[in-house]
Length: 285
Image (cartoon, rainbow, N blue to C red; front, side):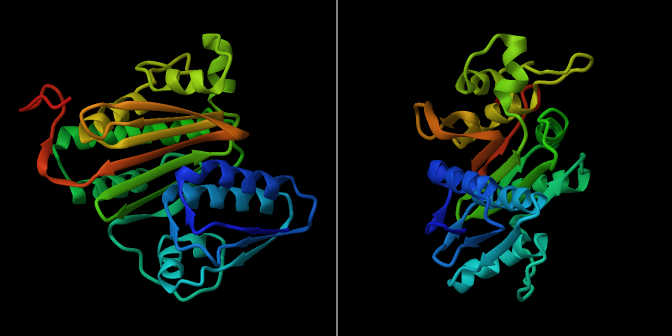
């Protein structure tokens, strides 16, 4: 099977990308070729989805082929972001740029990776130490949820990138999805309702410890930053767009359900403002 990927591998093309992912996992062919020859632009969303799909194919003992992008800059970006090394693909080595966080697969909390993500944020946004600490805890909780509560056998995938004036961060797992985890406890019937509930304060499946602050806290920060947050799980997709004076929540139903959860953040680079926590010198949020 040959899967020829589009020019742009981004969250806006999630239906098409999820279709490719399912075809790769479900095919009875012994070899799956991921053809990126015509691809010129990838975001962390596309990178982690590709990574997880290839990992699942390998776990099924399938042979995996990879056709590199024709565009040299795209090949160098994938090498620098850690995609080639992740799958032991031979290529010229390129050093990762300071504005990126390499593709990683995690089975447990990695404080060094969280620090690298905060450094990328701090490079582009002026934050107080209190806010940095709070975001660090929130990101740790996102990753903890991914490998502790998702049921994923392959942990979670993390990747971050700064492109022009946008920071993109994606955390994904290939587990059971939010509806399976939250549905019975909160009497939910569909994935979109589970996604909306998951971003509320205190919503958690943990019975003996506090939780439910990761998505809620990050959404508050994204709102103040006028950024975007997208959560995709099952056959549901929700996009919070806080750009401009009016915020919008967009709902989309996936043609094919995704067995897991993907959280994609877009944060605006802002070197003029200083971001505080409520209770510090200024009350930003």
